[in-house]
Image 1: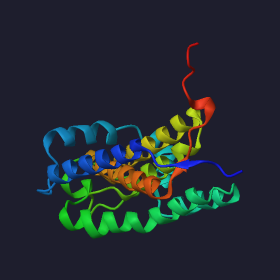
Image 2 (image 1 turned 135 degrees about the vertical axis):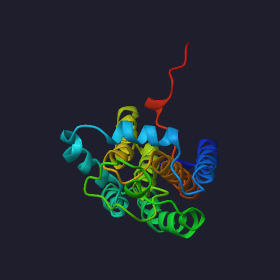
Image 3 (image 1 turned 180 degrees about the vertical axis):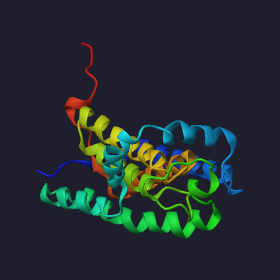
Image 4 (image 1 turned 120 degrees about the vertical axis):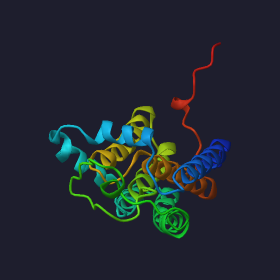
Length: 212
């Protein structure tokens, strides 16, 4: 028997919310500068011990463009056809939103150019910084996976997505609003994909117990 599939209002709300946050971040950085408060947040994360470089450099790999395709391969092995299709579609949609829309609207250089004293750890010093493509991928994959996971694994994938964004700031590749805007865009894209392809009906063990 096939698994029941449905389309959730929560995904529509998440898509709208992610789009709104992305728009707000786009407006906030539209002048291409990094303002004082954001710069302070950047330095708070970036100016840490180099001992964190190796593990956080590894964490950033969760946001590379090939990640959705690797996860899609695992989904195919588990016969999760809808999930695999959504993960594959995430790649071109990420490129369209990031490069075809947001980078056309905002031209903000990387912290190596815009933030004095930024520590760069194997990342470019110049080039467009907004939004973070790594954050789009990491949060896009996480949101697509959530309907298929139990509670503990949901928390784990969200923590990994957040860690990926923290890593990009620590390494000096992005300022905070770059990763916030990217994360919101990834959430919006993935939520729309969940609406289009549908997700499994919520499992019984995940539902709150009813009092008799």
